[in-house]
Length: 301
Image (tube, rainbow, N blue to C red; front, side):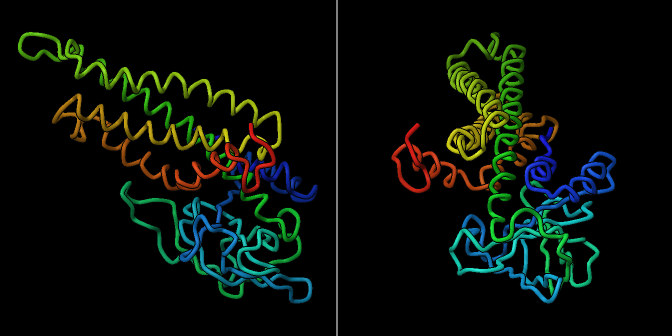
């Protein structure tokens, strides 16, 4: 499932010329974007990124490294975030560029092997890569606005995906326990089986309403107005998916732990969501910022 955040970024930040070029390409598959924000030395602290870009005549010259650069297995271009002015830690002074993946100096060093096995997340080196003024994506110096737009859309997408995976695990565990006979009775008659699944099922029901509400609000208002709600959805749903997969494995016993059932794969896949798009600790920090009225939050909601 997906909500095509790069399309939404182009809609909201692209120039008219970029929209004319890119929107048809998104639809017919001739234009495919990767996302390059994280670096070897900087993840959640994106304002400290070390990739730089400077003007040389009409061109921009970009140098740096990117890590966990998602989508590069099939991308025609990469959204590269680079510091163009200011000092480390300054949220302004970072710009976004649409960089062709076949540009001289742009190199995919390798793809990371993870808990979830091979990925589309690349390690990228950028050495004196030159792009024209048309490659600037969004306002100069305000690239983090694009990055926030992207991650908010991805966070709600992750939340919906994790909720669906969690409910599947719960349903399958219930089905198995109703069919499995132990000591002459259904496994499901045991409260030790029932209660953990009841807890998970209840949390899934509550999260479903919050995710639907938040997704609706994302369509109706500026994403920064609901950043705390997006964070709530993201960290709780991603954690729920892991908890539900783990409980399903436990309920189904040895076969649940095996690869003949999908729970171990679901766990491996959704465990990464507790780190990507901002770790769950970052999500909780955003909620705390809104709740206690500090940081960038202007009011308590």
